[in-house]
Length: 248
Image (cartoon, rainbow, N blue to C red; front, side, top):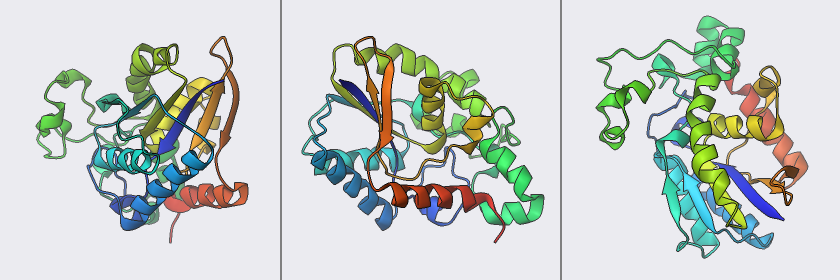
């Protein structure tokens, strides 16, 4: 039984402050490091052993992966980083508090910005220093491919070529793969694997640092999927993610 484990990074500084983060490169909190370490211990206790891992260019995902591999004594396995696994780009919302934004624009509008399938926030200007064209880590990415804002559809369109060309084909020779990324980038992969509709994907909330396992049959079709951990605890964590965009 071949497997791919998806893992959202641990709590970041802006998760804690309830801010739109997107491509802003914020670090993990102490809680986030502890969450990542716990995920590694959980995976080890369930007997997981990865052949290769994938992550984004953003430190909250990279450091989560490092913590997980350290707890599993798998620091040596190959790791591939790609900007295509970055979080959804939130445009000019990046840095704003979600609850305060809900107070100003209404919860419904914030939900649209956070979870709508094909509606993107207002883009960053070409001179805004938050624009990824000013970030050296993306210097090899064609400017036309660097987002100034994204909807979930845009995020999926960015991720899926990499999924189909690199990650999923690796399962042919590997037994188990690990992908550590972000709430929206992983949502795109899950939508693809589970054939979730554009409407229903809005309702999917991924808690931080809870392993989500996909099992594949001999034809590489999904045969089972499940979170590792206490179901009631996971349910509460999902509700907390849902409530981030509500007024105080």
